[in-house]
Length: 253
Image 1 (tube, one colour):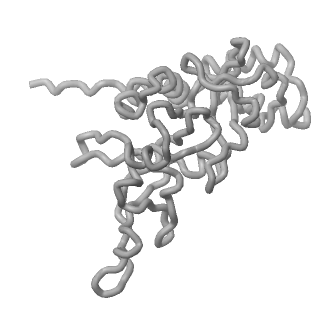
Image 2 (cartoon, rainbow, N blue to C red):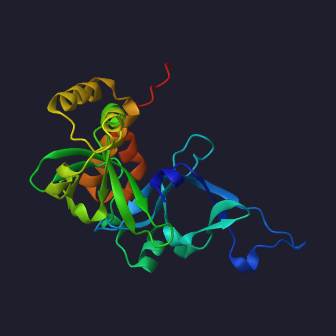
């Protein structure tokens, strides 16, 4: 399963199994909870432990903080992804049940990636994980939308992951030896050719000047959340700040 398969999906609340039928014996309809915002990884970064769910604004105006929902609490009900509406399936009680410290957990997607020796690789754009256990198989690393289109991305096995440091995902130096895949240049050379220095330089120019704001915002978000580590106490505010959301202008009287 990829993060992209569930990110942005609407999640619903459902009653406990013994309360799912109404007085007429018909299944109760699930209630909207919110949309999947970002995956949450364990402190060692090798497992998806749950998701931050973006809740709808109150009366369309007042922002609510994101809510943590663990992976093991999600289930399909009436054809839609749902979470049982019990205390132990949300936020701190859920973390306590799982035996994890949310403030030490990570959000890899959007975070800068550097090798142990300090060389920049790009940033983490995607993760493939087991939908049941949350175990990560590999990460997708990219230099940005333009370089991704030209060169492709690096699929990094989780074994190359070394940890987190100073706002970045730290990976083995050997990652630089992995081949690009999926890009125009990679396809032209049967997906495993070593890209020349000239092509790399051209991609960097394209990336610096051609990437859209959303791409840069996603990267900045990963950096910001990585630095704070205590990300879950002010997630909404950090997201706006990192993504560069402009402040609302006051109305003229």
